[in-house]
Length: 433
Image (cartoon, rainbow, N blue to C red; front, side, top):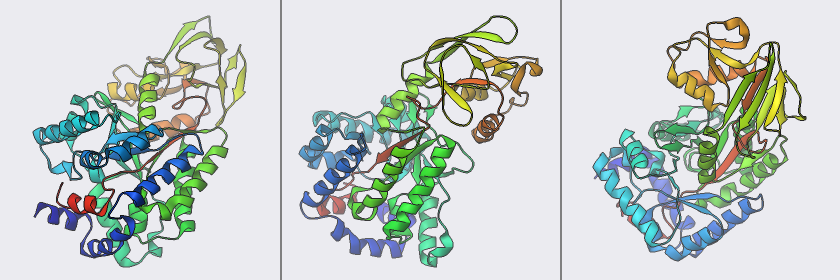
């Protein structure tokens, strides 16, 4: 009964019946059909120098260890996608620990490396975050971010309702209001997933035209690139015939951007976010308007300066910034090229600004800074986007680390959940097995 209720809540009767028709076309009685699609999936990304992340349910891995092992050997990153494909938002802390520990044991016994986690149906609760932290996952990728790039007026009424049902089920944050970036959550990194995904477009909105799917993904890519943020695509291998050309097109476009887009797996993004978090910019004043800087960071770090005189070679980047390869240099600026905040500002706000790569100075002298915040005693996650945009639009002298490595302006990951490989798997999935 719980599964029936879950399907009705997440899909609705009409979508359930339409899926019953298409599922036999997407899966076979053997693994050959999905295995071919998974290999094609890896081939597409490898042409662009990276591999996808495949969140995989443990019971599926247990049934098809050799297939998943071959994908891993080809360089694909595997992640845990629950023990079974169920709605973990409805589970208690103890139940989730039991399930995730069983999943970990299966991955280990099958010798499949994993760093990351994603909840089935992208559904989670606060207990899930505790479990992900307790079990030492490097990252989780279950939080959804909605990009409003679809003209729903072009869709039929039943399709709009099906899409709304999906959004209500995912409970996404709106990318208009939030930065779409990794975030630290206790001991792990949360990597947001961008929607609409292939299920939303194809199965809910009924968009099967490759050109239209490409246009939608292009719009999201353009937005994430302009904002310097992260695009994490969710594309299921069983629908590859619908989105294959769209993926190749946007990857080719992203490759041609300058500054570049960093292509990476979820694990690589999480590792980088941890690496970047340890970077510091040590400042020593050499008199009025002159500072020596020691950038304590890795070679991959992107150090940016804007509207300052620098004694070492710089290279044009974007948005008025220049990059510096040297880690020790001197800058001159008519205002302190750091961010000033009023004493007593929110610790969360200061943490956010430091994560964004700025030098933060608590001061009662706002005139010393091109950017000074005196209103950060109260701070919420929603404030991050407005603060970030205000800083970027200010055009004042600034020094910072950028979000991404090797001068990349934005980042892109491609993920595809593996929760069934055969029709039998899919049938068993319906019963939580």
